[in-house]
Amino acid sequence: RRFFELNNSFHNYLRITRILKSLGELGLEHYKLPLVRCFAYEVYQAGTLPNAEGSLCDYWLPVLRVEADRTSARKFVEALRQGESGSEVEGEDEGSRLRSLSGNAPEKDAHKVGVMLGRAKAKAGDGISPDQVNVNGEWDGGE
Image (cartoon, rainbow, N blue to C red):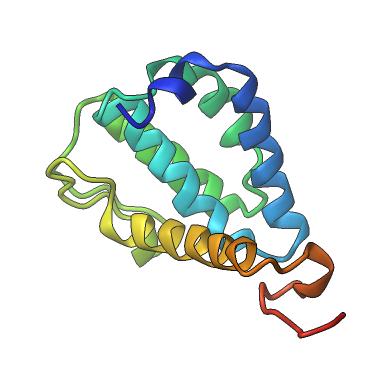
């Protein structure tokens, strides 16, 4: 249910591409792979974002700048396409493994994305303007 609007609002896919690109420009490249993996899980495993498959493969995967991340994400997507939900998929590092999903996005990926979204929500909720947040996502107390 929570992805219904996203699945049916194609204009938001361009926004996701922009978010992914912005993460890299802001020095937050390490958040991109977990976010892409979460979207891949929703497209192939959970089936909540089937309409996003084209954007995932054509735009979101190529936005990953680090070759090891792109390779890991492609292996992850291929494993999901083949229905491998509980087996391990070897990647470039420990963070790129497909673990038993049992109905949820991979725990490590979901945690990283949750932290990122929590920080953004906290900043917005406190009425902090973007010019008061440095590239590390920390409030600098500026006026």
